[in-house]
Length: 220
Image (cartoon, rainbow, N blue to C red; front, top):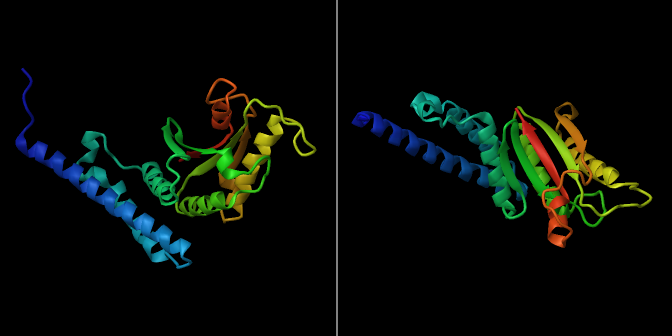
Protein backbone atom coordinates (compact mmCIF):
# COMPACT_ATOMS: atom_id res chain seq x y z
CA UNK A 1 0.00 0.00 0.00
CA UNK A 2 1.41 3.37 -1.06
CA UNK A 3 1.97 5.78 1.81
CA UNK A 4 1.11 9.45 1.57
CA UNK A 5 3.95 11.90 1.78
CA UNK A 6 4.36 13.72 5.09
CA UNK A 7 2.27 16.83 5.46
CA UNK A 8 5.27 19.15 5.71
CA UNK A 9 6.57 17.85 2.34
CA UNK A 10 3.27 18.61 0.61
CA UNK A 11 3.28 22.07 2.16
CA UNK A 12 6.84 22.73 0.98
CA UNK A 13 5.92 21.75 -2.59
CA UNK A 14 2.90 24.04 -2.48
CA UNK A 15 5.06 26.92 -1.23
CA UNK A 16 7.57 26.28 -4.04
CA UNK A 17 4.80 26.42 -6.63
CA UNK A 18 3.40 29.66 -5.17
CA UNK A 19 6.85 31.30 -5.06
CA UNK A 20 7.59 30.36 -8.67
CA UNK A 21 4.20 31.61 -9.89
CA UNK A 22 4.66 34.88 -7.98
CA UNK A 23 8.16 35.36 -9.41
CA UNK A 24 6.97 34.70 -12.97
CA UNK A 25 4.14 37.21 -12.59
CA UNK A 26 6.53 39.92 -11.35
CA UNK A 27 9.02 39.18 -14.14
CA UNK A 28 6.35 39.43 -16.84
CA UNK A 29 5.17 42.81 -15.51
CA UNK A 30 8.74 44.13 -15.46
CA UNK A 31 9.49 42.93 -19.01
CA UNK A 32 6.29 44.43 -20.42
CA UNK A 33 6.83 47.72 -18.54
CA UNK A 34 10.43 47.99 -19.82
CA UNK A 35 9.30 47.32 -23.40
CA UNK A 36 6.61 50.00 -23.15
CA UNK A 37 9.17 52.52 -21.90
CA UNK A 38 11.50 51.59 -24.73
CA UNK A 39 8.84 52.19 -27.36
CA UNK A 40 8.13 55.58 -25.75
CA UNK A 41 11.79 56.48 -26.22
CA UNK A 42 12.70 56.29 -22.53
CA UNK A 43 15.68 54.35 -21.24
CA UNK A 44 14.55 51.11 -19.60
CA UNK A 45 18.06 50.16 -18.43
CA UNK A 46 17.37 50.04 -14.71
CA UNK A 47 14.18 48.05 -15.30
CA UNK A 48 16.09 45.65 -17.55
CA UNK A 49 18.69 45.16 -14.81
CA UNK A 50 15.90 44.54 -12.31
CA UNK A 51 14.36 41.99 -14.68
CA UNK A 52 17.70 40.24 -15.07
CA UNK A 53 18.22 40.18 -11.30
CA UNK A 54 14.86 38.47 -10.88
CA UNK A 55 15.87 35.99 -13.57
CA UNK A 56 19.06 35.20 -11.69
CA UNK A 57 17.05 34.53 -8.56
CA UNK A 58 14.67 32.29 -10.46
CA UNK A 59 17.61 30.33 -11.85
CA UNK A 60 18.38 29.46 -8.26
CA UNK A 61 14.89 28.09 -7.71
CA UNK A 62 16.11 24.51 -7.03
CA UNK A 63 17.37 25.77 -3.68
CA UNK A 64 13.72 26.25 -2.76
CA UNK A 65 13.08 22.59 -3.44
CA UNK A 66 11.83 22.94 -7.00
CA UNK A 67 14.41 20.53 -8.36
CA UNK A 68 12.74 17.59 -6.68
CA UNK A 69 9.59 18.45 -8.66
CA UNK A 70 11.42 18.82 -11.99
CA UNK A 71 10.62 22.55 -12.15
CA UNK A 72 14.08 24.10 -12.31
CA UNK A 73 13.93 27.44 -14.17
CA UNK A 74 16.88 27.42 -16.58
CA UNK A 75 18.35 30.35 -18.50
CA UNK A 76 16.75 29.18 -21.76
CA UNK A 77 13.34 28.92 -20.10
CA UNK A 78 13.81 32.46 -18.82
CA UNK A 79 14.59 33.66 -22.35
CA UNK A 80 11.45 31.92 -23.64
CA UNK A 81 9.37 33.60 -20.96
CA UNK A 82 10.80 37.04 -21.80
CA UNK A 83 10.28 36.47 -25.53
CA UNK A 84 6.67 35.49 -24.94
CA UNK A 85 6.29 38.83 -23.18
CA UNK A 86 7.60 40.59 -26.30
CA UNK A 87 5.19 38.67 -28.51
CA UNK A 88 2.23 39.58 -26.31
CA UNK A 89 3.35 43.21 -26.12
CA UNK A 90 3.14 43.48 -29.91
CA UNK A 91 -0.11 41.45 -30.04
CA UNK A 92 1.54 38.79 -32.20
CA UNK A 93 0.45 35.68 -30.34
CA UNK A 94 -1.53 34.43 -33.34
CA UNK A 95 1.38 34.93 -35.74
CA UNK A 96 4.64 34.19 -33.94
CA UNK A 97 4.98 30.79 -32.30
CA UNK A 98 7.64 29.78 -29.78
CA UNK A 99 8.34 26.10 -29.26
CA UNK A 100 10.75 24.22 -27.03
CA UNK A 101 12.75 21.55 -28.87
CA UNK A 102 15.45 19.11 -27.83
CA UNK A 103 18.34 21.47 -28.61
CA UNK A 104 16.79 24.81 -27.70
CA UNK A 105 13.90 27.04 -28.77
CA UNK A 106 12.34 27.57 -32.19
CA UNK A 107 10.70 30.91 -32.99
CA UNK A 108 8.48 30.52 -36.08
CA UNK A 109 7.61 33.74 -37.92
CA UNK A 110 5.47 33.96 -41.08
CA UNK A 111 7.29 35.50 -44.04
CA UNK A 112 4.14 37.48 -44.79
CA UNK A 113 4.61 39.26 -41.45
CA UNK A 114 8.29 39.97 -42.03
CA UNK A 115 8.25 40.90 -45.73
CA UNK A 116 5.91 42.32 -48.36
CA UNK A 117 5.64 40.32 -51.58
CA UNK A 118 9.14 39.29 -52.69
CA UNK A 119 10.84 42.16 -50.88
CA UNK A 120 13.94 41.63 -48.74
CA UNK A 121 13.43 44.63 -46.45
CA UNK A 122 11.55 44.13 -43.19
CA UNK A 123 8.08 45.61 -42.80
CA UNK A 124 7.71 48.30 -40.07
CA UNK A 125 5.83 45.92 -37.77
CA UNK A 126 8.61 43.37 -38.16
CA UNK A 127 11.27 46.01 -37.44
CA UNK A 128 9.57 46.78 -34.12
CA UNK A 129 9.54 43.10 -33.13
CA UNK A 130 13.17 42.58 -34.16
CA UNK A 131 14.13 45.60 -32.01
CA UNK A 132 12.79 43.90 -28.90
CA UNK A 133 14.14 40.50 -29.90
CA UNK A 134 17.65 41.92 -30.32
CA UNK A 135 17.48 43.54 -26.89
CA UNK A 136 16.70 40.17 -25.33
CA UNK A 137 19.57 38.53 -27.23
CA UNK A 138 22.02 41.09 -25.85
CA UNK A 139 21.31 39.89 -22.33
CA UNK A 140 21.35 36.16 -23.11
CA UNK A 141 24.26 33.77 -23.63
CA UNK A 142 22.75 31.96 -26.61
CA UNK A 143 23.54 31.22 -30.23
CA UNK A 144 21.09 31.85 -33.05
CA UNK A 145 20.50 30.13 -36.40
CA UNK A 146 18.11 31.87 -38.81
CA UNK A 147 16.49 29.51 -41.34
CA UNK A 148 14.47 30.51 -44.40
CA UNK A 149 11.65 28.47 -45.97
CA UNK A 150 9.38 29.05 -48.98
CA UNK A 151 6.25 27.53 -50.47
CA UNK A 152 6.25 25.32 -53.58
CA UNK A 153 5.58 28.10 -56.09
CA UNK A 154 8.67 28.47 -58.28
CA UNK A 155 10.33 31.88 -58.16
CA UNK A 156 12.26 33.23 -61.13
CA UNK A 157 13.22 36.90 -61.11
CA UNK A 158 16.43 38.85 -61.82
CA UNK A 159 17.13 38.67 -58.07
CA UNK A 160 16.02 35.10 -57.32
CA UNK A 161 16.83 32.20 -59.60
CA UNK A 162 15.09 29.69 -57.34
CA UNK A 163 13.29 29.22 -54.04
CA UNK A 164 16.66 28.39 -52.54
CA UNK A 165 17.85 31.91 -53.29
CA UNK A 166 14.70 33.46 -51.85
CA UNK A 167 14.90 31.48 -48.60
CA UNK A 168 18.63 32.19 -48.21
CA UNK A 169 18.37 35.93 -48.86
CA UNK A 170 15.41 36.36 -46.53
CA UNK A 171 17.17 34.51 -43.72
CA UNK A 172 20.21 36.72 -44.38
CA UNK A 173 18.01 39.83 -44.20
CA UNK A 174 16.86 38.85 -40.70
CA UNK A 175 20.43 38.07 -39.65
CA UNK A 176 21.66 41.44 -40.95
CA UNK A 177 18.85 43.17 -39.05
CA UNK A 178 20.12 41.55 -35.84
CA UNK A 179 23.74 42.49 -36.61
CA UNK A 180 22.71 46.10 -37.23
CA UNK A 181 21.21 46.09 -33.73
CA UNK A 182 24.45 45.07 -32.08
CA UNK A 183 24.31 41.26 -32.11
CA UNK A 184 27.71 39.73 -32.84
CA UNK A 185 27.92 37.82 -36.10
CA UNK A 186 29.92 35.14 -34.27
CA UNK A 187 26.70 34.13 -32.52
CA UNK A 188 24.66 33.95 -35.72
CA UNK A 189 24.24 31.53 -38.62
CA UNK A 190 22.04 31.31 -41.72
CA UNK A 191 20.29 28.24 -43.13
CA UNK A 192 18.14 27.93 -46.26
CA UNK A 193 15.74 25.12 -47.15
CA UNK A 194 13.67 26.48 -50.04
CA UNK A 195 10.45 24.48 -50.29
CA UNK A 196 11.98 21.23 -49.01
CA UNK A 197 10.59 21.25 -45.45
CA UNK A 198 6.94 22.27 -45.62
CA UNK A 199 4.85 22.55 -42.46
CA UNK A 200 1.59 21.94 -44.32
CA UNK A 201 0.81 19.70 -47.26
CA UNK A 202 -1.36 20.75 -50.17
CA UNK A 203 -1.45 23.67 -52.54
CA UNK A 204 -4.09 25.83 -50.88
CA UNK A 205 -3.32 29.49 -50.08
CA UNK A 206 -3.45 28.67 -46.35
CA UNK A 207 -0.97 25.79 -46.66
CA UNK A 208 1.42 27.84 -48.77
CA UNK A 209 1.20 30.75 -46.34
CA UNK A 210 2.18 28.44 -43.47
CA UNK A 211 5.16 27.14 -45.42
CA UNK A 212 6.54 30.62 -46.17
CA UNK A 213 8.36 31.34 -42.94
CA UNK A 214 11.50 32.17 -41.03
CA UNK A 215 12.49 29.93 -38.14
CA UNK A 216 14.98 31.11 -35.54
CA UNK A 217 16.68 28.38 -33.53
CA UNK A 218 18.02 29.58 -30.20
CA UNK A 219 20.60 27.33 -28.57
CA UNK A 220 22.46 27.58 -25.26
